[in-house]
Length: 133
Image (tube, rainbow, N blue to C red; front, side):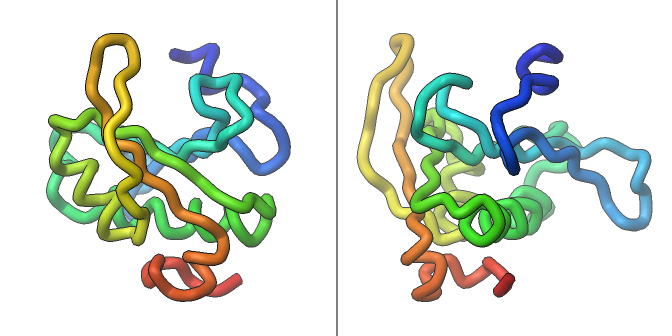
């Protein structure tokens, strides 16, 4: 995992640590913006948080500036997320941030839901949580 986090995925891509303003040294989780599987040309957004941070809105809040960065600073046309079909909390995050469900895919014997957001979606407001640049 450490090697993947330290990999240079290109300008503007990588992992961001998440903490609260009140406790900046208390790690809550991370948001990633990297090529799918670390090598694919498709760019994915993902999130992972410590269990104590679940259900508090941190993932939803932390993904918004990363999506804005993806579209405005990096200039991506689209971002995807593949979420384990059993992970209802992450599916909820993807929906709340304005990603659209693209259907089921199977990888490594596990069913995932594929989500997508385009730069156009973000500009048209389906990603209502993304602040303007």
